[in-house]
Amino acid sequence: MPLRIFNSLTRRKETFTAAGGEVKFFVCGPTVYDYIHLGHARTYIAFDIIARYLRFAGYRVRFLMNITDVADRVIHRAQELGRNPLQLAHEFEAAFKEDMLALGVKDIDKYERASDYVPQIIGQINGLIAKGIAYETETGVYFEVGRFPSFGRLSGLTQQELGLKRLELCSSKKHPEDFSLWRKSDRGLCWDSPWGLGRPGWHVEDTAISMTHFGDTYDLHGGASELIFPHHEAEIAQAEALTGKAPFVRFWIHTGLLSTKGRKMSKSLGNVIRVRDILKQYTPSELRYYFASYHYRQPVTMSDAAMRRARDQLNRFSRNLETLLHATGSSGSAKAETLVRAVKRAEWEFSRHMNDDFDTPRALATLTRLVSRLSASMNDGANLDQALRWKLAESVRRMAAVFGILT
Ligand SMILES: [Zn+2]
Image (cartoon, rainbow, N blue to C red; front, side, top):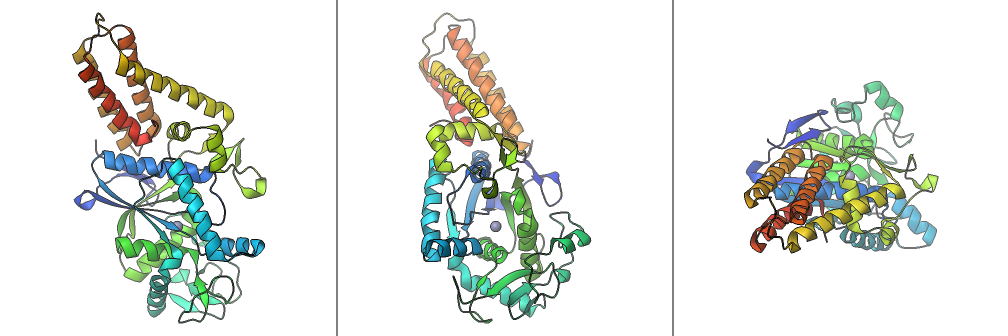
């Protein structure tokens, strides 16, 4: 069964192929003005599992993530603390990378900072102005949404709904739905530009970074579902208006929200749990096991009871694997070829589930059942020589490594 992925752009599962077996994969990184929380962990672990599976399935993956170090939130936080914004951002970036490594997210090939791409950003804005799609006012440069007819395609919002969104209230814009490409300002963070001192808008930072590395079109773009509008809608508009090529990205994939006690995790509700705090309570493997037991598009609810269940399940899984590795049976009824067949069958099922829009809950269940069965046969005294037991265990480990649940 070929790999099929639910494409947010078409709202259905489509067969995924990548030219030359290489997948250009971009995921929106964090705005680095604070430590990352569990909601970030949920999203980044989901995309890490997807990247690991693509590699498991034989693709070469070029995994790129931006770091939003130029943003209002960075500037405000720096003002509050009386700090230099970029220095502060880069401290939180370092903390973010530490947290990612602690979570076992080690497969990102490149992190790129928005602040390193100002010339490319200015180049893209110039291109959009030259095409008559962007315009300058006394406050900045704006993308004229009305000039890009397919705006709203990704989010599925109608023209009327888009009008009601009224992004970035500002009296100098031609239309309320137009969004900012460049903001004129001589405070906080600013660079020289053809429009005077200022800083880029968020959306154009990401198209400048991704197109520098991946060109006009690429394979996969991921992010949390709350980024669909306006962020990803704007990315598509900028890129496709600029290059005249569509689609900018072939597959858009989005993760469901994470909530605690039925509420979305947010600063205003005061229920934010930092990654570095949760890792004092649970291991990275336990967290990853828990997240893998949800489909990436599903919302995840965190609770201590659910986390303790995940811990128990993972402990049982590890014990079962140990049993397989260290068994010394000699009289059991299970035959070697039956168990070899069970492993082959589980490998096939594992891939079938993962090929179905990365169905990690089913793939994880397949793997868990396999390990219990192998362990039960060993306890039953199955007579397998060490080389064979290790070979079967190796197969289990390879699949478990897609989830990153064994240390
Ligand atoms: Zn982004």
